[in-house]
Length: 131
Image (cartoon, rainbow, N blue to C red; front, side, top):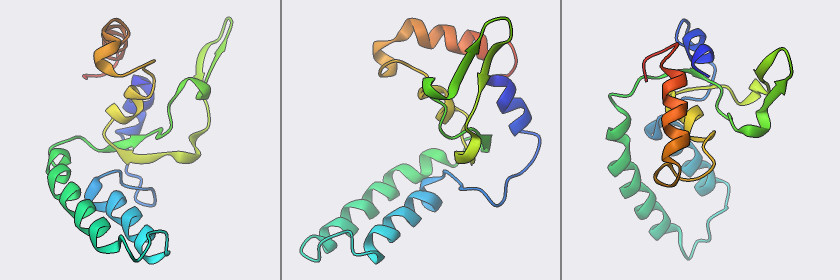
């Protein structure tokens, strides 16, 4: 994955989703509101809660590095071909976001429940790119 991120950091992807909450998450919330997916009974509460959540989390992303990432990097999108190594497939969800987005999806459970795998993932990643 680090090699994908090395390549991803070399160019911009202006026509792809920007995974910053103030951008993509806000757009998704607006889609739910405009598309009639939220009952009018709960609309005010929905808007209030989602607005407060965005206010809380958006700033957490402001100093994060944003590069081209796979966007859907999980075990089902990895092919292990004997003699050739592991290949990453299915780049149709490619987006711009923090590289950690691709890494956490590779873990078998929450980070606090798979420290061994997380340590190995970071060690391997850092052979090609700073974590």
